[in-house]
Amino acid sequence: MNTSSPAPESTPEQPRKISDAMYYILLMRRHWLFLLLGTLIPTAAMGYYMYNYQPNWYAATVTFVPPQMKSTGLGGMLGGITSALQDFGLSKVGGGGGAGYTHGVILRSRMLKDSLIEYYNLDSAYELQDATPGDVRKALDNNFDVTFEKLGNYALTIYDKDPETAARMANHAVKIGDNLASELFRTEASVQRGQMEKQMRQNQLNLQIAMDSIRWYANKYQLIEPEVQAAAAIEGLAQLRTEQFRQQTALELMRQYLGDNDPAVRTQEVLVENLRNQVANAQSEPGFVGNFSLDKGADVMLRYLTHRADAEAYGRMKAIMIPMYEQTILDEQRNMPSMYILDEALPPDRPARPMRSLFVAGTALMMLTILGIFVAILEKYRALKRDYPDYFGDKKKSLPRSTDS
Image 1: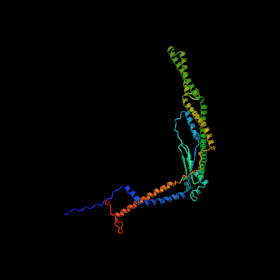
Image 2 (image 1 turned 90 degrees about the vertical axis):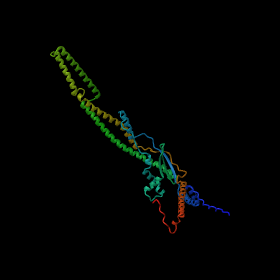
Image 3 (image 1 turned 30 degrees about the horizontal axis):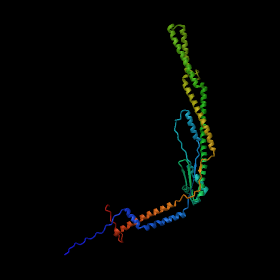
Image 4 (image 1 turned 90 degrees about the horizontal axis):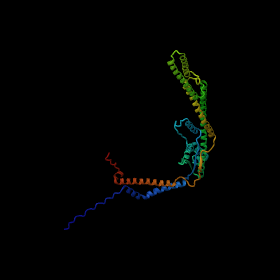
């Protein structure tokens, strides 16, 4: 009897696990037609809209440089003062520094933009007839750009639907900016002139006070050349004291040899006393070298020399300020360009915007991403419905709570 054991039952083959990346690739492959049509249709619609309804905008650029000119007005005055301080040995007093505005401030000013808006009727060109002036300026800001290059030149770019208008506006904007800069420069020179006139009047008043003080001291104390008079006073006083010491020494010797009661000794004592009085009078009484005593001579001469130094300083300041004042008058009246055009703006051959290919590519990428996320969510929903059918039927059960809660 053939007793054979039954054949073992075959176990079902387990599905092979794949990575998440491969899963999504296969998922996209399954729905490739949906993804393709969902991407192509909006992309084609965007391309049709961009190429048929969006106008071309042309960019015209003009480059210019500011003039190279020496400092004038108060800037030149500061240089002159530095030179004067070097004459006085005070060149290291204080520090240096400065600040100012650039032409970019003028080119971005509201006055310039309003001039362009009014001259070229930009509210109509931008289809903003009923908009506020601020909205029109914002629209112009989107089509207006000023950059400062590393080499020192400025580049002004204007966008417009007409290439000829874009070039005219760019060149015209520089001319308007030049007129504004010249007017601003003249206004600044006028303010500087007023300030310098005030300073010159004050300096002239101080100079007059110093000169009056010098004349008063010269008349009262008979000061003509203080240095010479001081040297003469020292020399004269030294001679008197030398003669006093010599006669005092002779008196002591005469007393030793002749005695105190000798007539020659008496005469010598009178001479020594007279010399002592002359020295005392020279030091305490005016008239030795001027109408002042030597005891007060240092104070008198110090004040006199102080007033003379003030007069010299105010005189030098006057010499510095006069040419600077004349320069501010010339600056106020001058009419020369503040912006020199290097390359005029020419009508561009190709539009600068919109970048249609970029918009089309962006639309395609965006739609592909959105549809891919949608397909992944939909596939996840189907998997949940397949694995938990009781929760998606007509009589839905409540979802099981998490064991963590």
